[in-house]
Length: 280
Image (tube, rainbow, N blue to C red; front, side, top):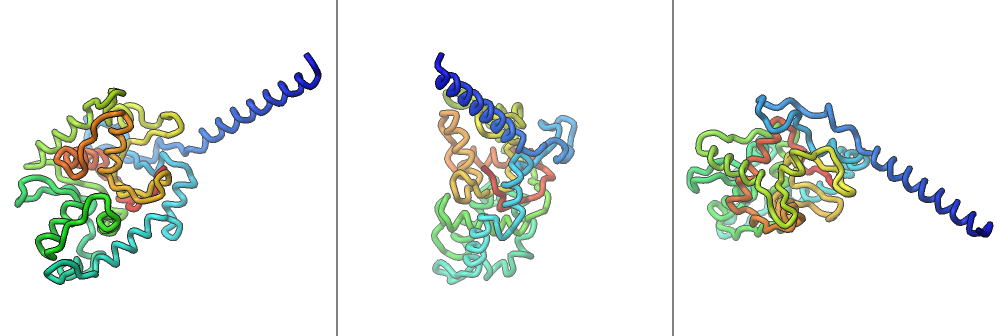
């Protein structure tokens, strides 16, 4: 073996070792998520400790969420605030025409969704309720799911509950919807044959390739996803998860999606609303 070849191999081994150390260091960048949660409300709860996705992210991502000036999700909060007072539709009304100051009238609303609708005889989530108000009170066209306007208004309304504990009703007429959501959450999907529970209940706190699996809590939605460079509503993320396992997603705002949202919200009972949260 020539001296040059020997030196090249030594350099290659050194680079490989350095990369391994760097990889190990990156793995250690994730904060310890254990001990940062809250106790479940019952012994038969599916999680031993209820932990926000915030604690499964890096310190840099946490710092971005903590700083309202650095948190990119606040652009949507500002847009939602503008839309709140903007008249729209044939009635010439805005959200503020009926609800006045959102900081007062919307406080706690986002923490309790989805809620039961006596008129529709089923639960509705925040996006649906916003469009119900637009149609019935403002005589305005509903915003399509995923549009900047609907996501911004959803973020703005949910932001009014920031810091309040998540606590949807799952009793009474909500019971069959809760049970449906629970069943769908545990149903395996797609070619990879995985359920929501496969990752977020049985394997949270572990790595899936380069990502660190959280409990899949919804207390931060809509969230600003660094990968997408925009705010992502919960039902879009649910679609993405099922798509990733090569399954057929439930359409956003469908009965199935709302039932899953109800169950997921219940799994985060007591967690503070973090909207707009920042995630990978």
